[in-house]
Image (cartoon, rainbow, N blue to C red; front, side, top):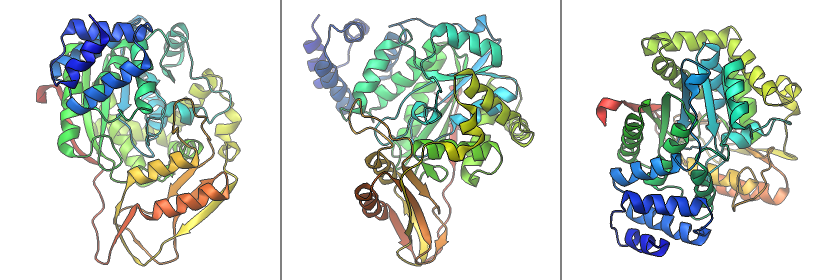
Length: 438
């Protein structure tokens, strides 16, 4: 069996066998198949897709490329959540401590930014000292001790996905549905969570542009979870504008802290309550969404979620003074408001342009290995449906130098569309996909 033959077969739109997929994944993982062949194969998958059978085989091959945890050894049940990637999506930073404060263990391995979408690890590393490289033993010990872990993917869990994940970011192959599904689910299967809430984004700021595409991806991931004997549900959520206001690493940490104190943007606060409630249902803590919402709200209102966030940061080496005094977090040298160019209703905001501009500012990576500037980013001060007056602050740009700030100003205005007539606000969610719907 040769790697080039497998690439050619997928190039020619043929279905790969389980043996071929296993051969390719193992060869890439062990360094026998080089990056350039893996890149060619990933592009062939992006262009020609994979059948559900192929996607499941790819998921299991990547999950089996390393160790697999059994979290039932340390907690009765652990729940995880995963977003397929969006702009301003700092949801994990709030829902993980909320759910853990409700007595349900959350063991999460997160990733870094992919393309224009921010990464949870990059955000948490805004906090000096915070470790995202816990070993498997440290992961298990911390989960048993405090009921919450938020770290990076360890080298011995789904290592094939870790290699492919980094490659996809710099080869234009991020939006492939089979690669997204297999990447997400291989990590979740390997990391051992028994219940998983999938936050599948759709819209101009997501990898799945339409509800149809998002629903298809959601069904495939929930189906894979069922085959792997995991409980899963997928939420279809809006990404036709950034979630919350902050886009950028330290800015998003600050917004998460505000939300844990009950002062976050309304759309982000609501999003977190919905995701938390579904995690609590899957974990068997509550019976329905209303009960889950009440429990999540109570965790926020009593400060229990905030205390759990601080326990998480401290357990992983983070300097608590930076979360207790968020103004100490990394900050950009230049901060300027961008005024609205006219008086009108905002009819659309292209979240992708906002996300790509954040990358240009330095909040993400344009190529593999790029350093992240944790202080830069964008604050989106008004949402779709709001009326703004000419000259009123529309955006707040955080930049490291004048050149990048001026480039961001020029790019960001192109993200906005306007209407003289009133415009409805966008929905936060479009539906739920459950196992029986796959």
